[in-house]
Amino acid sequence: MENTSSNLSVCENYRFNHKLHLVGYSVIFSFGLFLNLLALYIFLRYLRLKSVVSIYMFNLAISDLLFTLSLPLRLYYYSQHHWPFGTLLCQLSGSLFQINMYGSCLFLMCINVDRYVAIVHPLRWRHLRRPKVARLVCIAVWILILMGSIPAARIHLSNDCRYANGSISRCFEGFSTWEKNVLPLIVLAEILGFLLPLVTVAYGSGRIFHELCRAGGTQSVRRQKTVRLLIVNLAIFVICFVPYNTTLAIYGMMKANVVKVEEDTRSSVRQVLVVTVLLASLNCTLDPLIYYFSTEGFRNTFKKLRMGQGWDSEGGTDRTLVRRSGTTRSNSSNGEARYSTIEKGSPAIKKDPPSFKKGSLSPEKAQPAQPICPPVRPLRGIPIQDSAI
Image (cartoon, rainbow, N blue to C red; front, side, top):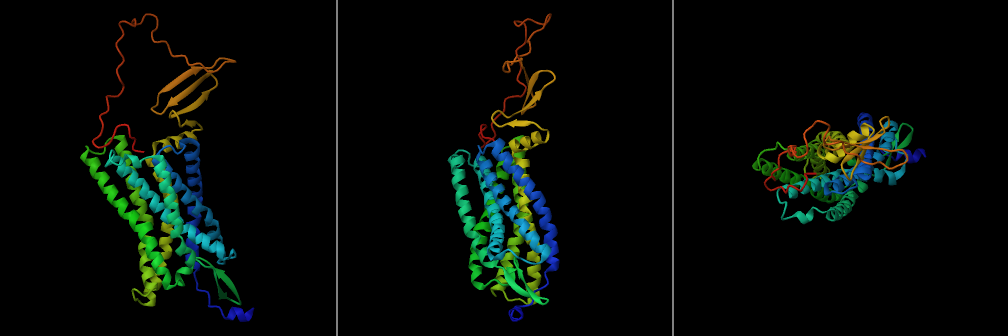
């Protein structure tokens, strides 16, 4: 045993990085697990995946949840500085990070493309905005990101090193030992999983902003909702994905000797990569902001759940039982209240309030009811029947 340990390389001191990751991943796990479980519950229980965007968001939440569920293994490793779970789980944990990152990029791209089609080309490409097409696209995305996780599986191998009088096993330190032949796989994954979504989102957002401004500003509720979606989408790319993928590309070229630098420079870039990994992992806590701020049905359902009310996904109403008065109150999504009396031993029967009281105007002399809202004119380039989300 001593002879075997003496043949191992000495463990490098990564304790500062481990403490940093321990704090960061603890926060990400706490918020990410709750938010993504809640999002999946709302999508499945209330929204029922009826729209194209909700299908993309549902798959995005699955991608985030898979990575979040792998974080306890990382937290154990960073707290104990030892990986006892074997090579297979090390590879799986590393691959889930890549699946989450590239999956988030691609599903955010799909959401952006759907907005682009709905606003810029609502008639020409309307056949693309069907739930069946969205499901096929999601299957293709999952196949692509599973293939893109292969480089991570080759890099994240558990390895032993000499520590004190024995040896310990390490994981997630593979950036220091990857081989040159991994670089082509990294480049391919970067192009398909990061650069393509980034360019698509930037172009699509620019065209959408231009179309909204040309149609007369961004003051309507529908347009404001679309603008919020685009801003959050771009913010996630800039904060989470751009720093990590840029640093990864630079470090990969250094490790493959495509760019020749001194060892101190390479170590500095690696340290930056350690920090940007946390930023990339942060996306699983930021993605739920897209669901909340840009999807009216999700936002309303979340509010009703907080108030202890049930949201009716069919009619857009929440149902609250008023027990003391013996009536059932149903609040519509626009704030109106409808009441129906519940008789003992009989089903609920809606009773409209009397239209005229004693001494009031007769029906013949009554003025016709005026609409609460003026007629809505269709926005230029946006069909009025097509909701933004």
